[in-house]
Length: 287
Image 1 (cartoon, helix red, strand yellow):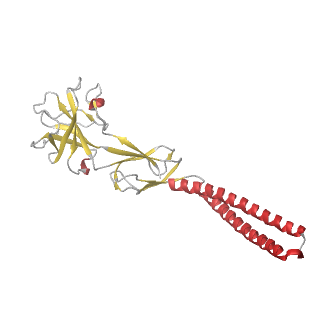
Image 2 (spheres, helix red, strand yellow; image 1 turned 180 degrees about the vertical axis):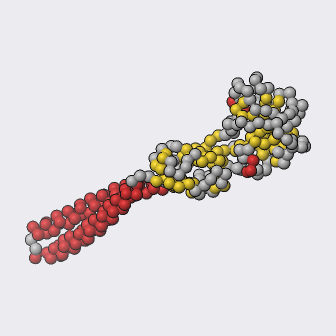
């Protein structure tokens, strides 16, 4: 089934994302190398929550069922693993389980037989000796002991078999949440280790844009202000870094998208103040 880890991609303070270099590295691992002008800025759309899906087992990727950008539902198959010798182990375990079940059935029949024999001798009264009665009692006790041993063995075999079945279930990697496949780090045929990340899935329900503003912008951004992504998607400013980067003179801000915009996820977008027209032409560099 795979394990998963929630990645906190929306962290504050934003000043953590600054690097002393030309431009700066955003938490989304994208570098802003240029700003268009004082009224139009460049940003990257990212999710508030991402989930890293990891393998619980060592094995070989047998199949991949999704592609990057695909929308998936919780529980949907993402991939399957081929675990060496698991099929052989399951076959042997199934056979051992059948033998253990048959042994219990046989010992139950023997207990019933010895119990019936003991009952006949008891009702016979003085027609049988105490020695014969004692022997019947011993045989009945021995049959019950063998049944208890067979039942204990069956329980142990069942436990081992269930562990193998659990391992088999873990070879099927499924989506832990509804979302979009943002990363797929494996290919069919790859050998992977337990704990290795195979996919990253993001929730498209809560998206943000992180963008850069010149410190001396003619139209400064304020908390609660509406900005526009590519001139069409509204977002409310929810965080602004307390100061500009000493090298670039840029201030980082974040805004929460006010509508679904799955097509913008992971993309670079132009961010404009409220009521501004989208910028035409180039002048922005995404590295």
